Length: 593
Image (cartoon, rainbow, N blue to C red; front, top):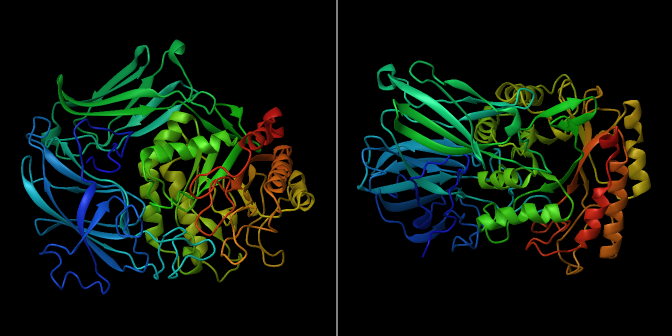
């Protein structure tokens, strides 16, 4: 039987040789987090689980939804011994483990990582080699009652309101990869430059020992369907991260956009003469994101961002999509309803979602699962984990903006400094790591950075007349803000591009019973028709506002008890998609300016 989720988990940085470790593992819960003292590291575990699905999910074969402060995994792994692995160092990759992971190989600790959304790697050089069998043990600590970044995962025993079933432990692919022990390519940073019709590539290389890198060069080759477009080569001997530029001939320039999501193939090679030391397959999209007054432009053209809120939950996989097709299907369903992108809400999505968005021309705002952290204490770990997410996703053309925080709701007051510092740190760190995209300091509620690139608000008013009145002041520089007027949560608006990044959310579940716990925003519509009409009127108000660059409708699918999706939790169609699409097809006022 093939292992589940056996597609390559990192499609923008692929080596041909790799081995998925998804499938059945030994598993044991550790309710007292005493497993190390009780010898779980050294013995076989009592249960079985299907990786990469979390133990709360039915796809894992367990479906246990109570608290699990710690869990243990164990598996015996044989490293391939064929030519592609011979003479190579072995890397062990975890795409995501929630939350605090420790990894042992043959009883030896080889890695630790904190953070439930981002990947980490354990270098097994001098630990195991090709053809060898080893014992892999993972402990994941994840006490959801503690303050930490966890997005919409419930800190309560049960689901409630906007909080949903937890994810504990391994929830994305685990895999092995052989690399050259001399030196190898690390994750590239590919920056498009539309004005100069070129790509700049910053290429970190693993070895920092000058002797090992002597004589090495780094070469990049850009290709399209007609063949080679450009190539460049630089010495890899001295610089920590060599940089080169790929200039595209005028007759081969093809931009990436929602209407034409062209992707160039990109071959990255580390060479000793013409001998290949390392080779990686990648791709790149040539597109720009700029701000012109209140417009956000893609490749110099104003594109109204018709976004949908996507929380990325699944009934059987929780945070993990049941299949790669399910990731692509969510994008296709959104586009069928007329949306051209999504706000990826309170979760760092699997990288394969971004791969499909790149292919389909789907605009994405990257966000972090920070919700609620501001209500307790701002921690350095939020900044560290957010920067890991940006580093992973920097080169994806689908991403057109970053938003590290959501609904920070404390007033601007002198004695509240911790949240001020956290917001500023996240904003400055994001701008420093990626100066090519706009940054929204926090979505909704408190804008604490006066120079934030864009502004927004959340508005769940269901009455179209009142909704329109809320936003009429934008023309005079007085946009709709969340929070009380007498204790402002935001600094004064300075004319930035503005969007309503959450609206709608009307509760419609034709199968809901009077006594169930389902909910949505505002008075429940009496019919699907009433819900569609409400959507049409609210969307029209925002599309017709010449000072609005986009919106984000809540939401793509129902999520457990929250029943305000365009689709059901099972992705069943709830409304006439053709009507929803027509409601969004009219050119927006800002696109006609």
